Length: 279
Ligand code: KIV
Ligand code: NA
Image (cartoon, rainbow, N blue to C red; front, side):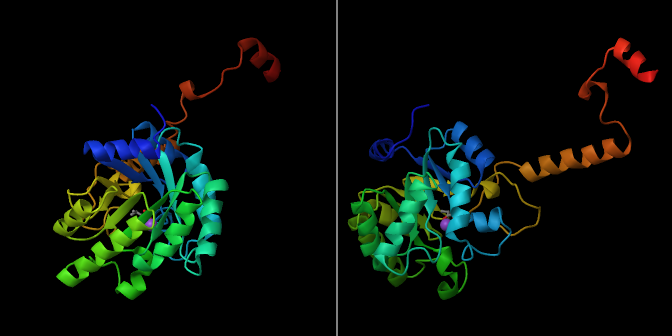
């Protein structure tokens, strides 16, 4: 498969063909997403929750992002790969954000960065895009701001709230963002935003009217303990936890019963050498 570039994504958008995006957080999750034909792979700061066992994304630091980015980047041969600017790495000034974006691209080896926010982050997006680094904006439910949003809550449920989201989206587009993630808002609102923009939108919990969709890989592959909370917008397409658990339980039983390892999983020694050994 050919390398997905920003032009490829532009072409998909122009043709009205949905852009497919998924998160990855290490080499295997990046590899399987890449060979399965994803257009975009996001090293999201959700890795704090799905790969590090944190309760939210806010504790994730730059060094952790870089470590995960490098692992994913080694696996992504075709997908356009982007990474989140983690909380604390971009809010102080456009210069701070620029420095962090450069680190993600140079040390993390991704092709672009994603920034949560709205109109207030536009000068920062402008700074980074003018330096030639592609930026994806993220509006709606922005998990890094969960404390001021009052938790992981659906956004744009009032006309006023929806207009604010539209305003934020347009500001990010005008600042140079090449794509926007729209998270957790009514589908009608995401559709209106998408129609008003001239850059693609990728929805998560934002309905079917976006230019593409994104999900967190461990959520959609079901690689989590049954009963763990998952948002309403997650469709579980596989049962990776169930499959891994079945295998591990069987392994345990076969070790306990000495059914494993059998002959086929061992290395032979010749009768001649064995006779010498036994003398
Ligand atoms: O961190 C993440 O996984 C994200 C996606 C949910 C868009 O930001
Ligand atoms: Na994120």
